[in-house]
Length: 242
Image (cartoon, rainbow, N blue to C red; front, top):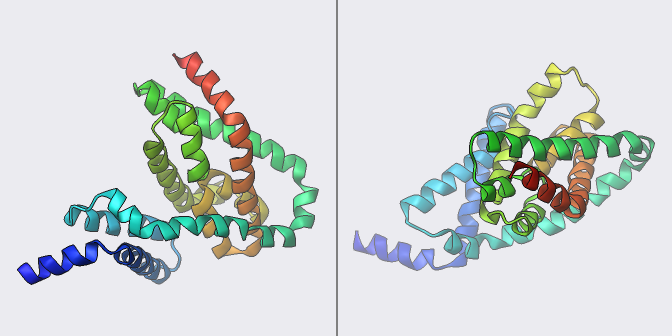
């Protein structure tokens, strides 16, 4: 076994290894997703996370070592978000005609998403730092971690909550929206982007460009508005609960 161990030690020190494993894990998960007929319950992000988690735990690899190799994927989040401007521009007419409803839905959605999570956690006896970490759990990861730090939360815990929120939201949104009998792709997309951020946007684009555009708009506006207002709302809510 010594040659195998020595080979693994050598490869694990290479940043390319973890980038490759990340891509292979996602391709494997996406293959399962397609074979399931794009069933939202077979979430490729959740599956790839589980695969990578097993590998990291099995090889006793720290997260920092993994991130040092896979950070290029993290870097691409920025360009991917900026690229959402293209479908938004193509749907500009519909966006402009619905701006009042979109603003109201955005504000209500952010307050409900943040407030409900904090109130439920408070009722279950969560610590103040945990409550602060949950305030921004429904917006995209970089913004959420920054807000969490300002509120005195734990950014790493916030990141985990954001990922879980995205996975659960993108997996269950279809069934919830169908139960509510909402056929509009614009409404479904906005709800998906607002509740499940990046993963919701990815899921929405698999359905239609219109749904993806509205999901991208929701994610972008949620990040912008949250960065301005959520710290104040979070401080106020945490003060009330304390």
